[in-house]
Length: 427
Length: 52
Image 1 (cartoon, rainbow over the protein chains, first blue to last red):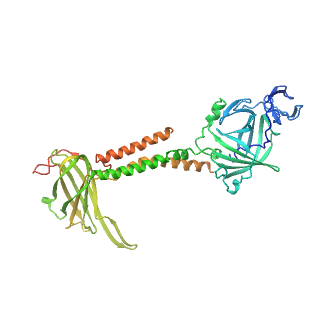
Image 2: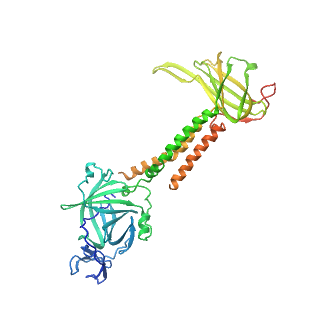
Image 3: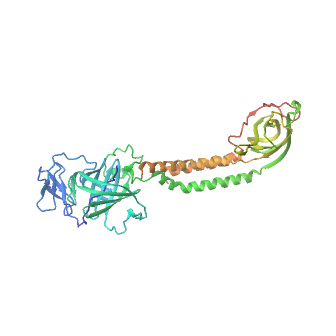
């Protein structure tokens, strides 16, 4: 809806009066005046007629033929909201542009009046602000530590009324309302003639109202998806993100420290294996290096290959062969380096070195078996050599980055959800 | 601490356990074309299985 529900003008609360039963001048039905002495208008729950209750002789203001509205909370209901006991004494429907909502007037003889506003499955609790000297949200000034953003402005019209009210409310009554949102809060400014009334509304979880007044849950088919009605609805994703942000930080720090400790504890050693001649015939195509001893029960190894490439490629295949068990751990890697000059200038791609990991090697003695082929621009094998190094007990950072990805997956999802929520409600 | 916070804490714990155990066991994800097969030793004149 374009304009969130505003709150009508208030009168200063006065000492509480006792409930009083009066007869409706229109239909004769009994009315219980619960805020006697403060209520000005009452709408008969039976026939909907508006009655002037400010005068000693109860008088009919306007008679309605419509039937009593089906209220979400029955008149006279009592419930505890935010730790205070309230009684519902009046209700009305208001609308603006293409939206309508309901406002329920709560009364506590010691605390005065509050408004329960219902719009599209969402509830908020509002109270009129008496000291508005520091209230300038339209100028970007924060209020209660919140920076409020101005929403739409428009004319709000009363649709129907039931119960008691502290001002002479009538159907069709109009005010100019402007709202400012800072979820879960909203400020509503209403202008009616020269009178300006500010109301502060706070979002309530629907379950809180339903439990307080023991009513059935309203339809909230889209309550999880923000729209313009959800201007007050707290961004649950942001709230959850705030809850877990320390955990995220400590988990990332812990992962980094564990990776460093793992690197130190692994005591990696790099062995200069030797060279592999790329110029060879079928008889000496396969070269065997070693043996190399792996002591940990399980460890990783990394083979590093470097060759002076000039517009050429190299492919190495091979394996680490366990000399005791005969198990073979194979690898396959290639690298290439090309460069040149074209109309855009000089270019190059690839690299003259490469490495490959071998994962989860059992303890034992191993031979390194290497078989390589190469080619230049003319398709001829290279006459150069590949320098080989073998890093034993290697620790790879892939595990660290996988852990980081796992740690960050949920926070990133929450950020996505939070941004989507804010976009959809178009604050 | 609510369900989501507790659940996320469990996920973080799993991530850290994975990091420690995989590093300790020399496990590296996406470690090229490493495969295993049985065969003889390459040294000592025994047969080894090697596939290009």
